Image 1 (tube, helix red, strand yellow):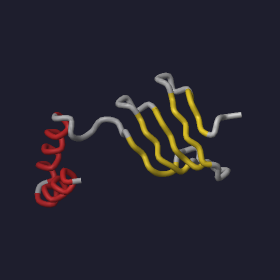
Image 2 (cartoon, helix red, strand yellow; image 1 turned 180 degrees about the vertical axis):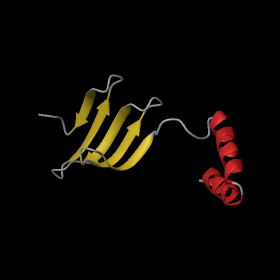
Image 3 (cartoon, helix red, strand yellow; image 1 turned 30 degrees about the vertical axis):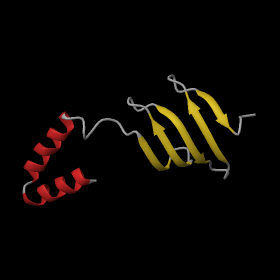
Image 4 (spheres, helix red, strand yellow; image 1 turned 135 degrees about the vertical axis):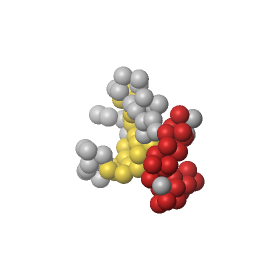
Length: 89
């Protein structure tokens, strides 16, 4: 949040300087990369907390599906559900 506030302030005065600063933070690994956390609604209309690995692959999802059922799913490295609560029938 502090970095975004800093970039916003710089961008108000000098948009090009803000881009350079962003790239500097990106090179240090402080910005950019893939999203690791999402809180909201998925394309399949699930609302919840979605966690991803450093490659952007899903690892865990805690959500309420479109049928109002709460679920918790864990994924292996291939994107397959390896554990689920409640267990899938």
